[in-house]
Length: 64
Image 1: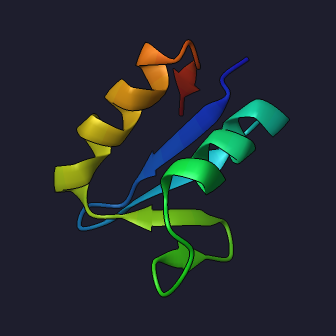
Image 2 (image 1 turned 90 degrees about the horizontal axis):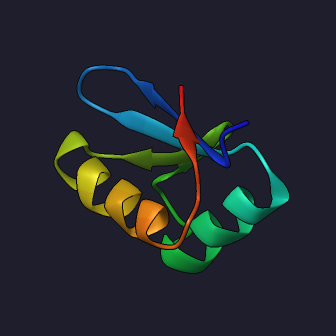
């Protein structure tokens, strides 16, 4: 089971913590504010790979 789920919507991606570990990691590494949506962290596609690489480096699993 993935810790973080990614949904690609073209001009934005939404990252959601699918587990408590994933949600905690996102909350610790991404800022709340205008880029926080109802369903997760709204991220520009150019930043997604760096964010997910950081999560993978810390042993988290990524899924869609």
